[in-house]
Figure 1 (cartoon, rainbow, N blue to C red):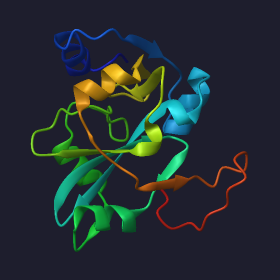
Figure 2 (figure 1 turned 30 degrees about the vertical axis):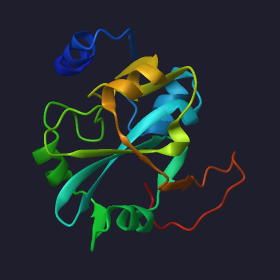
Figure 3 (figure 1 turned 60 degrees about the horizontal axis):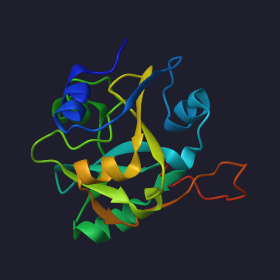
Length: 171
């Protein structure tokens, strides 16, 4: 596999320096972090939720989980739930399910970034496949994507972090 053409095109059109990286197939953002030998705090994962029937792209570190109640409150929505695979395929074409790049590409889809992702240096995100990713400076990515910044996550149940949370909001 290789980085989705539209991802390369979008980055090139914005004149941003980036590096494509390729790794063994990985189906979670934490697995991507391990393959690329980078902290999960610097891997931007995408979680898609449906808020009152419309898709919202949430971007947060691989080391954290979405708190759906916080997202519902921030969006002033009646209902917020994880999108189904069919909904993701309908709204997020041109990429493998579960490998949505942390970019603003789909018209009519709002993008929210968890404030815990803000960092100096580089971040990494999946490039539309489970074997490809993009590394680039966080500041360049942030200027290009221009996400709404909020706090809507908590640390994962990763035993290496020392945090233990209930199984609610597993993503």
